[in-house]
Length: 229
Ligand SMILES: *Cc1c(COP(=O)(O)O)cnc(C)c1O
Image (cartoon, rainbow, N blue to C red; front, side, top):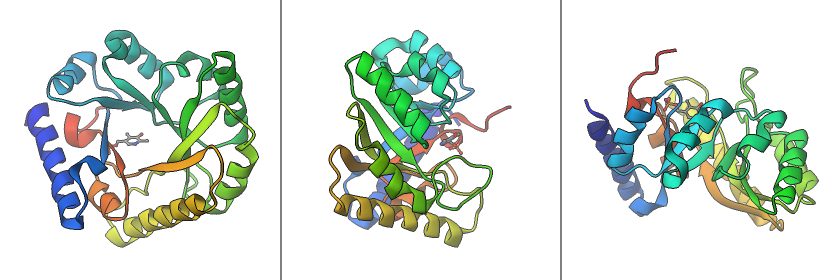
């Protein structure tokens, strides 16, 4: 299957899922995850309409920024080391992986210096997996309260990576908890904290994520094929 075919399939699948839910097809933003995908291959996807790419390593992200310039919106979806913030802060559309105070401090400092607002999502490790980054469910509200003072950070929502499993019950439970958390935070009306995006759903689980309220999916292998590490 070509990238074009894959992309068509994924988009149709997303649209069908939304239609069944009575939601508009514009309701979900697709982030094409391009880690380990070379620029030529990404260009193919660009030609058939992708607008946003996600990378989990700063070095890879920088390479792609160099190659494509402002033809694409860039998303940092992986763990972000504090000392690498300066390389991407003014070029990235959204950082999905805000998960600790030290990172918030650095983001705010660098953003202030450049007179910009950095758009972020808070990463939540809702299933409490040891192998994953992100705040636990209980830590999220206190964390938000501790970063309210950072005027150059705009929180736009939440992100999670679900456990790697085919157990749909487990997945649905994770996504539902995220949705509830988002509603809870929304209800608190914090200034500078918006809950516009719920970034959840990958190749394996995006349909369930959308059914449970996701409006931003990060899809790699279903578009570009299985990654060779
Ligand atoms: C790799 C990755 C994805 C995409 O995973 P696929 O299973 O290839 O769709 C999504 N989000 C994050 C954070 C990733 O690292």
